[in-house]
Length: 183
Length: 132
Image (tube, rainbow over all chains, first blue to last red; front, side):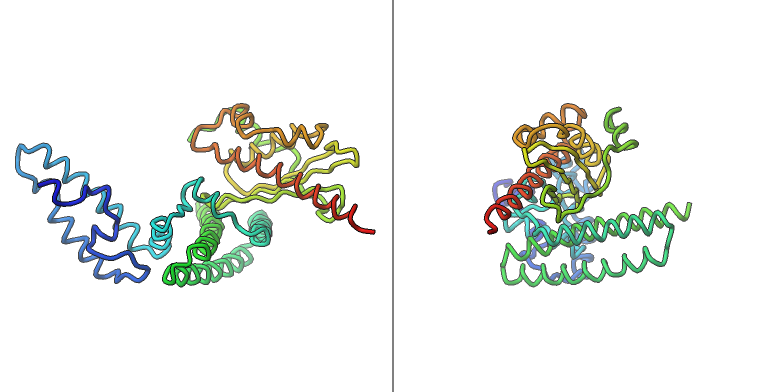
């Protein structure tokens, strides 16, 4: 009976939700499917005393949660699609296979230096202005990455999504700064 | 995560933070990044015409281990020849700082930065020699 379906770990996050891998998912539909599956697969529904069934339910639910977190978020979903295409930017080895152009690294360096100065001066308006610009750049890069994934252009997608990661890191620094100012 | 004493020491008192004129023919600039974490590291070496590293500066936007790795290599490369500096490996850096496995990529970044800076210097030199 177990042989009838692939083991959960071999199934993609998309397959778990009965979807083909795609950039364009209906997040509302995913959310309701998630609720249905969470109930249906809940470990408490495993037959009493069947510890193996219970264990399986626990592992399936854990995978469902992981899949949900990835699929509902456009950035994580795009990175996951890129990973399925063979480049895992979230691992060092995968990232090393997709080096960023030098002029982009220079741009990041300049932006981070400007942010550092603004934070040191506690210049909120400047920090926010820099962050707004980076948010716009991140949105642009994500759109470019999604377009590239739709046309299966893995190289362009990895460059665009690599940019998204650097911009996301920048915005994490902004968030940390703002939080520190509040306390 | 707990950082080791040496990492904390470099993090709190980073050596040789700063920048040099990247257009100086005796300055090699290495700029590297880690998409996995989104951090960037710039290492600059001032190299004499005889190929000896006279000074080193760095600027790193990253975690404590990345800052410590770059700070450490600026100390190590000074006085070395370009060839000797090019032989520094990430293993030596990670060992000196006792970096945990999840932070090994920070030492890889520092090694890559040295190699990139040397390459930049050598390319500049070749251009200079090629020019009439």
